[in-house]
Length: 102
Length: 209
Image (cartoon, rainbow over all chains, first blue to last red; front, side, top):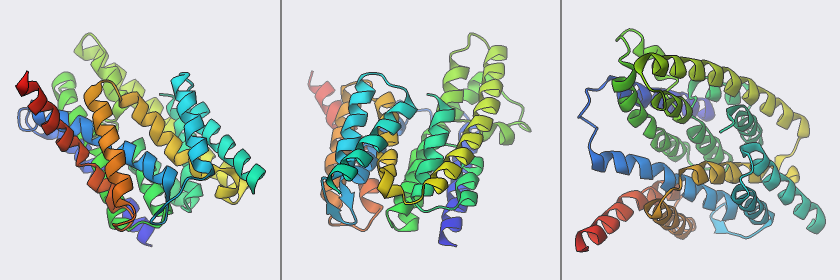
């Protein structure tokens, strides 16, 4: 049930934010500092999410097969691999290391 | 970005995080902004506080307001159409519309991109979630690495200059430092502070020049 509530709130909130942008008079949000902050916040959050989901295990920091998988994904990104290839590389490398060390 | 493919990855990740097929598809139909969806299921799957998970997803969605702002100048949509167009305001549709030379082609570009991406994203989410359900235990297959790899790919597309790199670096340090100390989901919100911190820092640097 909690998951459904979280989905509903996220859906309403994300829609409201989209509608707000296209409805408010220009100039209200259109300031360079506000715009710059809004461009940088997603970068901060994606970087944090990447780090936490790679090294987090509950509240502990661990280096396990996921770290190798995400490192392999980073190499794939540097080689300009398409999105699904990047994700697939991470999954396959993580699974392979688990199978080898399991 | 190939949205159909990332929709597939979202379906797999969401199912791996323990969400049902209906919940996964509801997210793609109703939220329709990839990074927020990945963030929500990632935080819920890690056992995070649902309120913090939602806050993280909403923070990531805020950039769509700024796309909307620019699109409202560009498309000048009638008031009655705006509530329908709003749902399609995402990274890709904004990029396509802004790349057009005039209003008519911007409107056409926005509509065509919006309709095709919405269809693709939802179909591929459905297929991804079905596929993951057929595979069984997600961590046995390494599917728990799909989420962070997807974030990394989204992040890489946004990293353009020194300021962006500084923000990403600060955010990683803040997030990992807070992880053992704060409840699940909260470290990501703390890490968002990296954006204003880096801005203050680089502005002062500019002022010294």
